[in-house]
Each structure stands twice: as C-alpha cells, then as structure tokens.
Amino acid sequence: MKILFTVIACLSLALAVLAKALRTTQQAPERSLSAPTYYIAAEVYDCEPDPNYIDFRGASNLPSGAVVGALVIDLAEAKAYSEYAYVPVNGAGFFAGRIEPKQGMRFHHGLVLQVFFAPFRPKQAESVLRIIGKKGERLEEVANVSLTVPGDMVRPAVNPQLIMWSGDIYGLDTIASVPECGENQK
Image 1: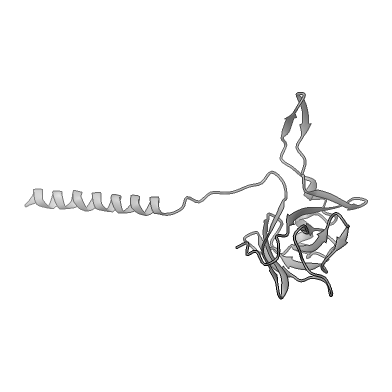
Image 2: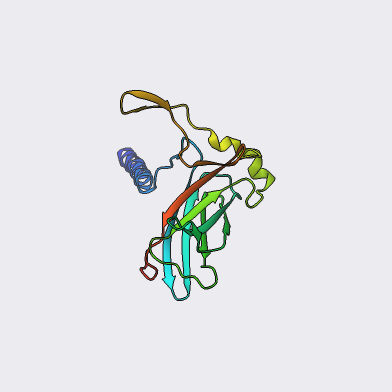
C-alpha cells in the first residue's frame, strides 16, 4: 500500500510539472523592446474615394499623451491636400486617426501622409515636455553607437527622423505613401 501511495504521489508530481511546462510554452515570452532613440512610424491603412478619407495608424516611443500631427501633401507640388489632424499616442505607444481632404480636393495616388511630432504644435502637456524637453532637445539623444560607412569612415549614430523647426526646437518627422483611394489596404 505504501508503494501505491508513492507511485501516485510521483505521478501527481510528474503531471503537475508537465502541466506547468505546457502552460509556459503556450504563453508568449515577455520581452522588453527598446529603441536606440525616439521614433515615430506611420502607415495609411485605408483610403476610400467616397466619402474621401484616409485612415492612418502608427507607433512611437514618445511619452503617453504626446500628440502627433498628420497632413496629406503632394511633395512634388509642395501643396497640402488636407488640414492638420492631431491624435494622441496612447499608453501602449500607438496612435490612429482619420483625415479628410480640404474642400474641393480629393486624395489620390502619389500623395504622402506626413506625420510629425513637435513640442509646440499643438502645445504638448507638461508631462510630455518634462520627458522630451521644453524644446524637444532630448529627441536628439541616441544610443552611444558608432557606424562604419563606406570608405571605413566612422560616424556617430544620429536620429534619422529628427528635424529642427527653428532655432533650437526639435521634432520628429516621417512619411507614408497614400495608395490609390478605393484600394483597401487592410
């Protein structure tokens, strides 16, 4: 009888270990993603002809509550096809919005969606400015990395999305192409 209890106890322990192992392998491992500098990424994921609009979404490691701006432009003509749209970055680092063309205009292939962050447009919350700097000066910070470029020249890494608005005020800028409106991009 003592042997039977020992066998049952061992089997119970083995089943418990196996169940825990199965639970562990079924769960996605937690990982901490990082970036070497501040970034903003965006895409147009839907563009419809009637009513004419663009839906966009993106991700950023800007502080939660930071507000990013979006504008549809024709780079070749340096012409704006929309008014500015402003959307907040949520706590998970994502944003989404819809933008419509200016009165009498229509979105078409060849346009780009410009998405930007600036400490002044619109005025950002104090909690955001405490992190990125009153003039966005911390947006310039990058990981201490050197890059070797052709010709064996060593250059420091830079934030490729960094822009200088005027004087010493920094922001971030990226673009996404606008598809032929009516082609579903989902």
